[in-house]
Length: 201
Image (cartoon, rainbow, N blue to C red; front, top):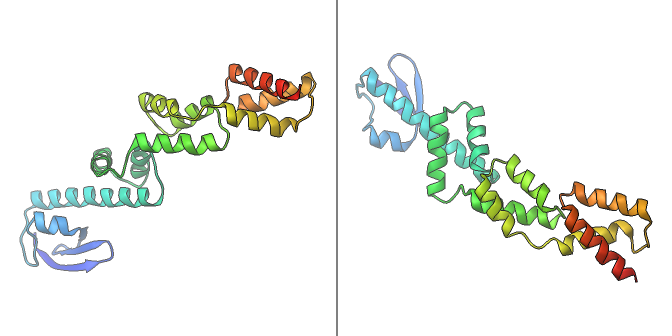
């Protein structure tokens, strides 16, 4: 089958094939397949060209997604699959972006822990969030080990909740429940309540 015309287009290079079909490729495929107007390609090479073009499109799509927002490897692959990429192309795109340093679950997990720790999230909620975003257990635990100690955040939250008052048992239970929902352990909560009481004395 003959390529009748090669013209630049918004997404790369448009190939017009003699059967009336078109194919968008990148300059990479033009060079690697030695394409030019008038070249005859057998069906096998056309199929290989289409597969290479689809893989390159998936890579470009993945790079575009990560340029807008950081994601975990798992979430990037899921988004690529939702947009119609094959599992193989999605995995290969993720591999290439990891080699380039653009996709990095360790850095992503560390950034999430820093961001949500600053918002007053405790370790349990941080762990759940990392899990929800597809971060592997080993990377999750490494990121959590580098989280700031909870004392300052939990003390500030407790102070804000109780407003410097001498709370009764009901107020303390509500404050403790709030801290537990934010992901702090009961041990950290008890220690924070103890510090709060001492500061009032």
